[in-house]
Image 1: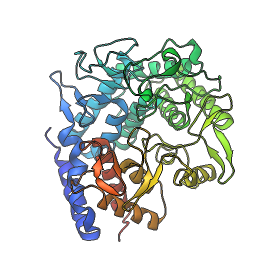
Image 2 (image 1 turned 120 degrees about the horizontal axis):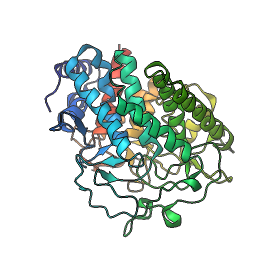
Image 3 (image 1 turned 90 degrees about the vertical axis):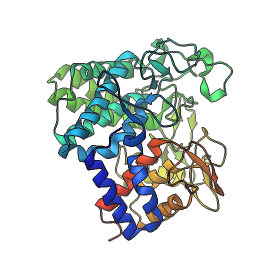
Image 4 (image 1 turned 60 degrees about the vertical axis):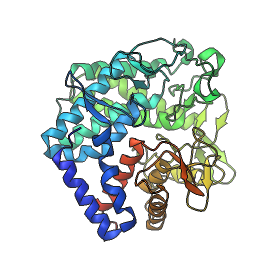
Length: 426
């Protein structure tokens, strides 16, 4: 992929800044910042754009939105970059309309994934694990692009169709018993399939919207995934503005507004627990019957990422209580070692810390000391590759998963951009 000149210039600027102010990170800056645009974005024969996640040749809705997010802030001044980002936004809308329950898609209708899952089949689909955040991500990307550039031409007829699909699926999945969605995979680890004949464990009706899988692509233990519902509240707010201001579709805008209110009410009524050590905190998952899963996963949306996802402020008391829990050994997926400490995931080997988790900790912190600790860990755990990875052993960073994981690289680059913009080292 030809790299737009404005991104080349920004990469050089970042490299110069960190060479002067924090040399341990300087060798990582350029290649992590450009990793997505250089290695994962492809223009197809029809002129559209497709974004693979890295070492897997499929386009995840969540990952692709996150991968290009750091580039959006430069698009207003560069038509070449506008063409790429607008092509990605349109591709996401097209894919959601093909199958709003799918999380990842093939480059064409080639049936390339190789999975023989028991679910509704579609040759466009790489994987059909229904994840609430997959439908939120295109709204986040489009809204951010619109607000940064003022450009409304992204709001096409296909995008409007996507808006209708999203509110329809979220509303249907407020009562999962009425849904026809099911997913079963055989001869796999337990986390790759849904229990109860592919329908997931029973849930109560709460106002929240049901999710089969987490952003890790692991199945939910309980069907109301709180971080994804938080992301949905914000995404629906973005959708409401788009419907009203760009499409003058008041009927759809009202649907978005009312659904966001119902989901938020559900989070506040069913998603908060009293912890003996931390006070009131958000659960990671619940079934609405009084059962809770108290944990956090490094994949975003996560409880740690709430301010990053614009659900609440960093100072919010419930968030602060929850954050103290997440960044402690009371979170079963928080690990400490000689070289690093942070949030991991049941998706990777026990004890592995995630670079995305460390980056998100820094992005949601106002503590200079905490941010510096995170930067030091990032500088010391890339195993000499000058790239971020998925999970790694905090005692031996050379033991890691995914050498080519573009989301981790560009999220890291986003942190570096933010710190430079704020004059963090000056």
